[in-house]
Image 1: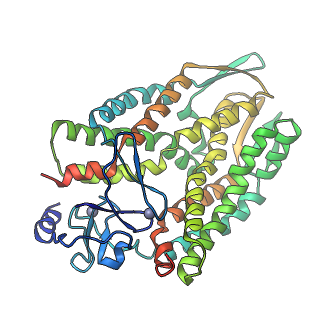
Image 2: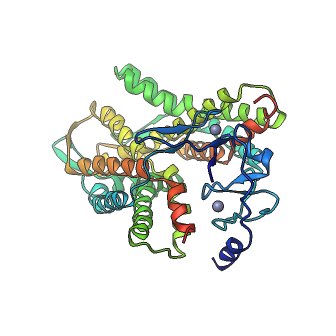
Image 3: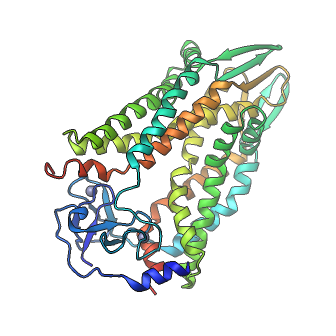
Length: 223
Length: 197
Ligand SMILES: [Zn+2]
Ligand SMILES: [Zn+2]
């Protein structure tokens, strides 16, 4: 904290006014993601002069981190969908359920609405999330001319809807607790539950490590 | 300074004077730049304190009773997550973190930082607390838990008779408090307070 105070004391040269309508990076200015304050890029290379946290113009290695996490998610999405996610123990006999067979059971018992919720949260969203993030980060890296507004909209949707993938894990924990003491019925998580958790967590981190400002950096001339 | 930089697309905009109830949006990416109302630290402090008080009953009281073959079983949130530890520790960790730890820690952090503003104190601890608050907002998933709970109830309906318990009301109240806290909170406002003497 002492070093932070020192830095705050030494360099605060925010006197020349910024021109609106241009990106801050074009005017030697960076925004601190922690404290939401602007500072000069050339004078503050390592730390934010306002809050003292390490700063970089764009999130460091943003695209590489996003890609690494997406690769892990892509690998684990296969076991998550192939192996059983839950076992239903009924009269000492185990009935395995994969994500898909669980959804089919819901459809066959007439709970189509719930089946759609589970299908969207557990199957559609993780796959769409990986594809969307992959396309956006490729576009940012190779400066593809895809409408930046569309890209940011896709990112915002992916970021918001991604958290709903965790739904199935919560459902498992609730089902387990409900059937805890009963000898007649019980529920256990399968290998796919852990794989699915890895997919959900890595895609959440992948979305967070992607810096959306890179979308506009790739389209600076196009605006 | 009379300009503002968009944290989503890096566009510099002039800071307009906002009338009450209005929101400034970025011209390039349409994300919210800032709201007219300043964060009300007293209100957040009250919300966060209430949330902290409601958290123990919300997590430990029974949410639902299941009537199965003459036996009634009660289920609470913590019990469900703790049972998972033996079978799938990673799943258990994620469930406990997103449904219990993150919402409680978030309330505690906002309680601390709002109390600092109300008392006009700037302890060194405030800086890590504010950083943690921004992180925790992402990981607090009570709303997902409530929907999951409803999905689970629909699934269970075909096996057994269900009765709602008190814990559910506490949990819904906690969710509403949590969401109002996050709505009211402003990262920039709290940091402004911390860095300005
Ligand atoms: Zn800063
Ligand atoms: Zn913007």
